[in-house]
Length: 369
Image (cartoon, rainbow, N blue to C red; front, side, top):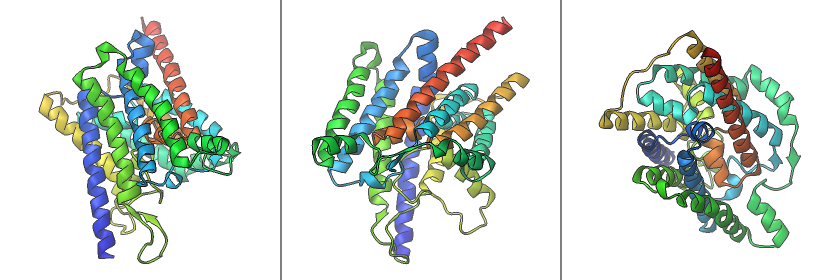
């Protein structure tokens, strides 16, 4: 047990440091999926879309490189289930995408803004966490399980693109994984780097840095923190994870678990996990960067309508993020890096919801004018 506790401490420290780097990079480079969609829809500017594409491409190639090197088991991740929950991903993604526009940012951006002094993002953080926990174990969880989660396709094998290619072609899974990763991830990277104006230090830092952090998080959780036999139960275990499986960065569920840990801190069964320390790490990294660059400033609500929009957005993100099995980072980067079929649908839903949210915001402005 002392060795297990030491390993857990090592995993938690590594996850915290990676999330500090994530928060600092996101604060400096303005990396934000919601902002990327807004820039593209409202201004025709695809700079931040290219940042996201570069990060996703690096994460995809890096994940399957780890699998090919024997450093990670693709079948033991949070996204490798046999059931393709396409309706949950689509509906949840749509709700999350709409919510993040109303709340001025997704889960990760909320944490980044909290670190930079946004009090209204702190309110979003709390409401999002409550809504997410209710959708995992409370009243909205009952509705979720009884409706959208009932609609799924069971493939009898992990619902991942390389698994399908391997089954059709007869290729070994690691080879199929590298081929798919090279095709999908390579295309994303190539498109991102094809823009001459995109190739600045901050843009490259945002894309390459965030993508590399996601890959490193997979290694920490899926390799460093993996034990074939727990010393007490003799079961295999991924140390310090909420799901009991390999995890990378995600923020909807972890925000809920962070609130739970804070409220029941004296309960010895409430242990720190990779997700919880990642929440603290992003806030710390963003705060450090904001203070270092002189961009830290206190921010509050602009009025009653502003409060209402942020509260509604936080609820939609909490419900949608859990229903879709992840947020713009949980599904948009970590999940997508596995080439999960569910992640592709969730990302499409998030983008559709964000576009819808932007249209609504334009309508509001035109109505006020």
